[in-house]
Amino acid sequence: MTDTRTAERVWETWERLPFAERKPVAAIASALRLTTAEVAGILLPGLAWEDSMEPIPHPRPSSAMTESDRRYELYGLTSSLEQAQADAREETGLAGLERTRRLLHLTGQLPPHAPLTRSPSLDRFRGLMIGTAVGDSLGRPVEGHRRVSVDYVAEVITNPPPMRLTDDTAMTIGLAESLLAADGFSGDDLAQRFAENYRSDPDRGYGGGAIKVFKEVLRGMPWQKAAGSLFGGTGSYGNGAAMRVAPVALWSFGDLGSTIRLAEETAKITHTHPEGIEGAVLQAAAAWHALHSDANGKLDLDGILSDLKHLAHTDEFTQALEILPLCLDRDDEERTRLHLGNGVRASRSVITALHCFLKATAFEEAIVRALQMGGDVDTIAAMTGALAGARFGLAGIPEAWQQVEGRAQLLALADAIYARRA
Image (cartoon, rainbow, N blue to C red; front, side):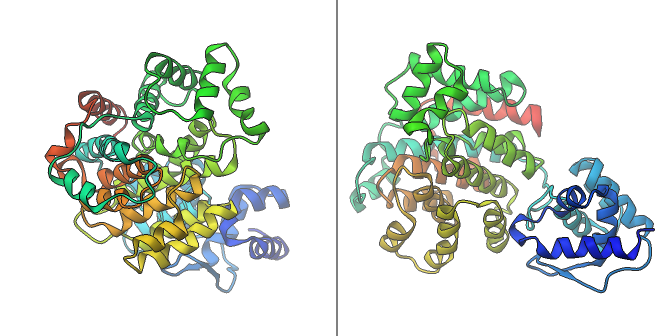
C-alpha cells in the first residue's frame, strides 16, 4: 500500500497541473520518481467526474484499489483501447464504458470527451474522401473572391461546374496512397510521393511554399531540411497540412490518440510552424469525431469543442476556438468571416470550416455555408466537405456533386483503407 506522504505528494502535483495539460500518470510518475501504476493507484479512486469531465478531488482514499479498478488501471496503462473496451462491455454501471473512457483520459490516452469507438461504416469512409473533393472542386472557380455571389451558390446546387480538383485533393490522395503503401507513416515515402505527384501534374494550384519543398526533395534534399527552411526557418503556418489530413482519421479510426500523432507527423512534411501543425491536428481530430458521430442525432458539440480546446496550444487557435461558440449562436456570414477568417493561414480557415460543418444538418448545407465564406474557399470547402462527408456519408452527398474528377480513385482508396484498418 502506498504511504500517506507519497499520496499527498501525488495529489499536490496533480493540483498544480493546468487542466489542459493534464496527462498526470506519466507526468507525475516522472516528476516524483514513482511508477505509473503507483500514481494511477492513488489518483483513480479519488476522482469524481462530472459531465464536463473536469476532475474534482474527493476525500483521498486510504484503502487499496478494488480488483476492478486494478484491471482498468492495467488496461489503461499497458494495453490497447480495444482491450479496455472489450473488458468494459462485460461490466455494468460505472465500471462499464464510462469508466474506461475516464481512465483512458486519466492516463493521457484520450482527451476528456472523446467517444469510444463506434462500428465503422464504409459509406462514411467514402463520404470523407469524396466530400473533400466535392468541396475542393466547387470552391475552385471562386477561390480568392472575398464574397461568393448568391447566384453562383444557387447555380452549383442544381448545375455544378466541371468538378476539377486542386492541390487540396491531389495531396489528400497522395497521403492516402502513402499510408497504404507504407502501412502507416513514412516521411520519406510521403515526401517523395508529394513531390512526384507535383512534378507529374503541377497545374493544380500548389502553394509557393509546398512547391519549394517539393523541388528541393526532387533535388535530393531531406524533406525535414526542406520544410524547415521555409520562411526564414520559421516554417509555414498555412492551411496546407490541414487541407489534406482527413485520411489520417480513416487510417486511425479506432484511436483518437493515434489520429492526433499521425496528423502531426504528416504535417511536418511541409509545415514546421506550430500553427500549421496544429491546424492539421485539429482538422484530423474533428474528422475523427465526425466519423464517430450519430448522423441521425444531435452532434455532441460540447464534447467536440472540449477535445479541440484540449489539443489547441497556440494563441491563435485557442482564441479562435473561444470565439467559435459565439459565431455558432448567430447565423451571420459576415460576422463569421470577420472573426474566424477565410484566408490561407491555418488559424484563419480551419475553424471556419469547422463552423460550417457544425452549423449544418446536411452535407449540401455545409458546403453552401463554406462557399459563402469566400477567400481561400476551395480549401475551406474541402475541409468542410471532409467533415460533412464523414458524418453524413457518401449517401448524403448529392448525386450531381459526386461526379468529381478522380472519383474512382478516391473511392478505391477509401475502400482499401477500410479493408485494411476498419
